Image (cartoon, rainbow, N blue to C red):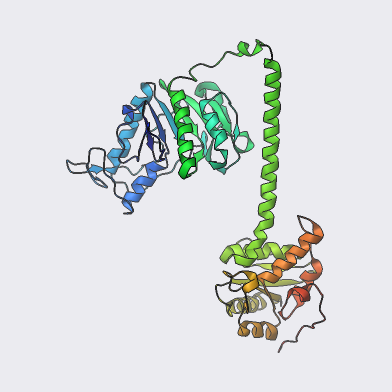
Length: 453
């Protein structure tokens, strides 16, 4: 039995790999594996000139009417619906990657071109919300060890993610779904549905791995697809069959349940550890990031110094200490030494605040100059003009390296979640000019220089 893939190539001698615009008829095959994203991506690639396609009969595909010389995008996509219906009516097995529906604009004669208009749905089900909803995650737990797909999901779990979840109610009533795997909050991410005389199996998203791993993944999927196509899951044991014990079966079932619980607990611990690791390592952005990522790292770093953000999301950063003193914060990350632009922005903000609110605030500038160099190799991360401006106008100036060192000290003293290094935060609020790590920590007698005002 040969297998057709659309949108996801499987290097295997039993597989023919194509796109929606150049594939032969689905009805020529006993099984198919389809990534519905290709139903919008391939037309978009052609529309935007990134790629050309030739239909299976040799005619070029274009965004116009079908003729003896060319085939329209609309006709190529639309005919898949008739093929899929006939394919399933003949008892075919159709594996479909679970993704949220989406449309592509600009297809002549088919403005509603989307990812699922071609796929017949089980009775009472639509391939759209609430039965199929957008989601994102990587934690996937096997719910049905007996399904042929479960081995592939388990073996290649590190290369899996999900972009959509199914309604748990689909396992009941008319849909008669068989849940294969669950994602976050025990929502189904893989399931098998009877559709017409065939079966549709919704799968998680498989990563585009390469090399030997891709070949092994292809073989695992071919094995699963072949088993489903051969009717391995045609019948479900009746409920009373579970009551018939065999020597050792009860112990094996208990062991399997215990293993599943242990697996779930281990997955939860792994996820918690990953979240904690991500939260900690995010502080490294102070040394290399730019733009919003660097600004967010500065906000998180200052919070560990007891300077909480008081500005609304999307607005320029403003912080306040426990004593109520507040400051505007400007950030700058550059390939070369940071120039005077953060000072200019800060000065304008403070002047506007003074005119509109009548209050005078402090200023803090955090820069990450020469950000592509290893921190140990950096010299003069900011210009002399920026330093002079901060000294004269009474703004604190520090580098991402300094803030990173203060964050490390806060984490050392307060554990993984950190304890506010409030004394350092107060020094930043009232400092003038460049503030190094020792000055921020109060380990030097260096006085603040008076400004010209």
